[in-house]
Length: 357
Image (cartoon, rainbow, N blue to C red; front, side, top):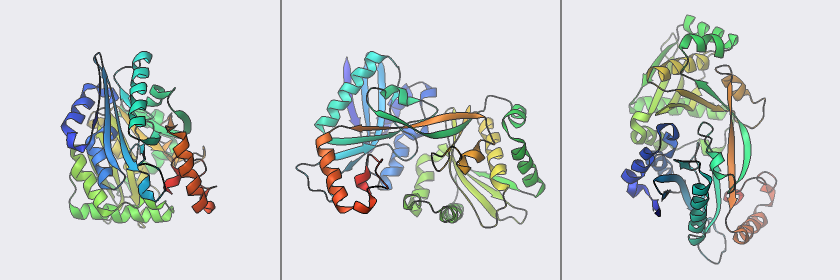
């Protein structure tokens, strides 16, 4: 028996039920309806989850659906594009059987055709390696490396064999200087406000793109929607000032470094201390892999990537996937965009959804 269906956030219970049918090592927070609710509320699109079932196996594929016409393009019908929520996304499957996956992609492509989906963009999950499920569907592109740590090692082995000597020295210095950690599972409004202030300060320093200046409600929704899967870590200096504040996710076997910032009072040891404490905590609550993420660019010498490699020797590739479902309409949209945005053609030339900029 073959069955397919589409869920929205009105089907949160069913969405989670299907996610929980997958093996635990194939689940993560980025595929939950709660996570997609966060980004629908943020205005990033309508949260959908495509489900495919055949003979006891399933594929679960969440994405955000957006109208293209609302951007002001002149088109002959209503058209859409789809992409995953910020972070890691793509499809999850209970099996990597080629025949099953081909049946899924055939069904999904028909869904896209029937629903006027023009283009599809995916940021695959480095730990789950789900890019391998779409080899014949997407144009798959290596984007950058990310850093992961095996938490099944004892902490002494991690300290001795994974951490760099410079990292160990920075952690010792932070401890000597009187740094202390506070781990909060349900922060109050003042604690979230402090995080926002510190996070925005850091975004200004690195001249981050406008998208990363999330609205205040976004941060409050992060904690109210994700509940037991999200933690706020604060580092205090010897004067009891919060000098570093970070959001981490935990789901099943995985612990993720998400968003972070440092205040103007921070010294250069606080991030090392913070992440060391996060490693200890992740082990304590039973996580098996700590994913630090990558750098802010695809440059192999990216400073943030190099900082993260101080905590682990393991690097995982991060891939993106591009798919054009309707080449003719896509070309019409891009031509209109280029006519009105000639100054941006070069900057966004490699972006699949360039017409959204």
